[in-house]
Length: 341
Image 1: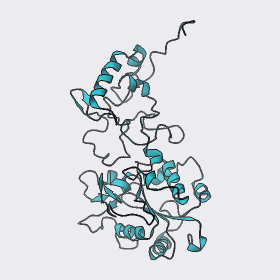
Image 2 (image 1 turned 135 degrees about the vertical axis):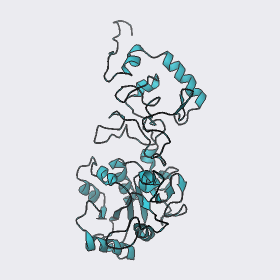
Image 3 (image 1 turned 30 degrees about the vertical axis):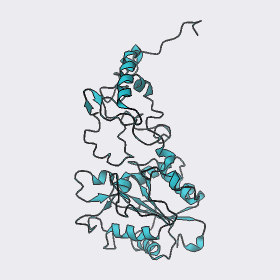
Image 4 (image 1 turned 60 degrees about the vertical axis):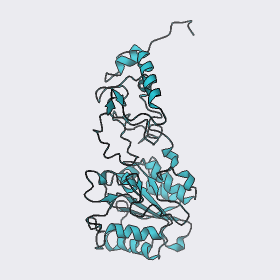
């Protein structure tokens, strides 16, 4: 059997899916390493079972689950993708694990009690995410959070045997490297409580802001703002962009080697944060009071932002101002006159 304790030295990982879209697994397949199985194997990760990547199904797959739950197979890491569906009325019967007649949340509780580590893959598994939106009729929650409130399925006080809380690889979906690197770090014993931020997200990516490395930073500096989705300007003032508040390295660790939401022309919606699914306003609109965005960059006092924005706008070069409201550069950069160094 894969992952038998006699194998020793391997990191046995069981990956389950609950209330979600499967997008986290799709993202995982985009790992820059190319051959995902070879990458994980090279790092000592034994993927006991994954609903999309494993050949085992039906009774054979359930035997893998049962062996982990019974302790016959050592379970090092339990990964859950998708929110836990507790409804209706706390029974969990909105999501029964196929072939078992038991709610998935019961399996997750049982397996989490056996696992050396538990990883929430994606914002749904971490905080409830999109599955908890729209009034949350399924009573969806994360493994250790319900929105930004500690609790969730396992409870705020739950800890793995070595003291780690649930590791929240948040994102909708997470970058493939965030998932792979987290598993590799766990396998190496290189992920401790100090390596997680206040919301349990690995600091390897959560200590960055999406704003870092944004290709529109020149427009941001001058507050030269876009007014339409196709405009080149900064998306913060009018188009709902939260890159200056979002914890992730999306613009320095690009997707598929070249992409990010902002590079694709889309505003950052802060998908690594709890509650992103219901911001209280349209995703592509910036709520304001007296013309000033309500949500300002992290660490910046409002008075400073207002003063700097006014100064920046007054100093905006013509090139930046006109290009900001166009879908391609209209005014090229000037060329210095020789001798003026």
